[in-house]
Amino acid sequence: MLVRANANEIHDADPNSVLHLIADTETVTSNRSVFRDGSDGAPPHFHTRASEMFYVLGGELEMLVDDQVLTLTKGDFLLVPPRTPHAFGAVAGKDADVLCVFTPGMGRFDYYRLLDRVQRGEADPKEIAASSQRFDNHYFESPLWKKTRERVSPGGA
Image (tube, rainbow, N blue to C red; front, side, top):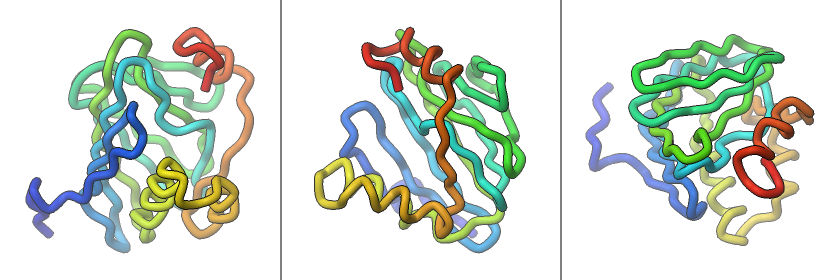
């Protein structure tokens, strides 16, 4: 499968991030996310079926993985296995440019489209919670992540 750069579907309703949808098949879902200066990516969550891989193309990415907070820099790779709690966002004062890959894929582009509609005020945020089984995104509260991100932006994640 070849996907040309000009064929990416781009979502930019969130002023702090740009999401490039690259590929979405039964075996793999891939996107490129650019998070601006300390902005949040995904809140604490886990996947029951998918592994998620992160490759930092540029900048610095702060990540919650289980009960640790890590900083990934350009060239770092991280594999998050199924059922592993994680969250991520750009480090304060830095942007983060990240390639994310899920395996298996599962029509996850519709999830990103839903997030974009919520950002634009075209969908109710409750739809995100209602879609947790369909898109294998299971959210939870993490006091460690909340405390960590409060350092990054007023009000936290």
